[in-house]
Length: 210
Ligand code: HEC
Ligand code: HEC
Image (cartoon, rainbow, N blue to C red; front, side, top):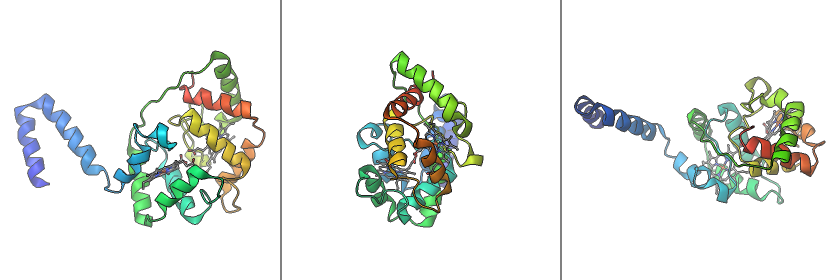
């Protein structure tokens, strides 16, 4: 480690612009916990669409930690009809409490990458009105989330993932357990949503909230 740093210092003196790039990269790799490599097999930018895994970068650490604990204790991903949740529950099973807190803090500290899926203007308009009327009070005007309400950020999530989660809350696959107050709150708000409402609001968020 020391050798790498002194090498970087040498390069830094010799070649300032390249060295800035190099040290930035070395820093990112050094900070990444070894366990995170497994996660990126599904949660990475290139793998998310195929795996159905949401983007974790930029999400609140407390929210990520809670979800991982819930995948372990069966409050999420235990139902036979919840195929994606079951997949993730299998991944969470072997994590220690320390791993969970390390990974939650790591992903929360990363910058989310933008993923914009364009959508039809009429659908976006419907989604916008719905978002402002029924979601923004908890999830924030820009879907940036609100820690005080335990409401996660939605801005970095894909339309497909959001639609699926709204369906899961509505079907009682998420937010059913008595001890899960934030989940129950969200489940309550999903109940009045029609399939069309879900698609519209998810398309609006997935399109970057234009
Ligand atoms: C085999 C693919 C796969 C791997 C590997 C994987 N995940 Fe997941 N993960 C998923 C899927 C799919 C979901 C969405 C589950 C759902 O739809 O409810 C998910 C959901 C999550 C969520 C919930 C996020 C949210 O916004 O609610 C967290 C947190 C999470 N994963 C963390 C991790 C961590 C940490 C690792 C590495 C230890 C990991 N995952 C490895 C597939 C994977
Ligand atoms: C009363 C506050 C409140 C309102 C209103 C609300 N939510 Fe939520 N939402 C929450 C909370 C709290 C959670 C976290 C649940 C958990 O911890 O599992 C959540 C979770 C979610 C998730 C899961 C995110 C993820 O990463 O898996 C989605 C998607 C979501 N909300 C969408 C919406 C949409 C769309 C609306 C409007 C139709 C809405 N919410 C309205 C409080 C709210």
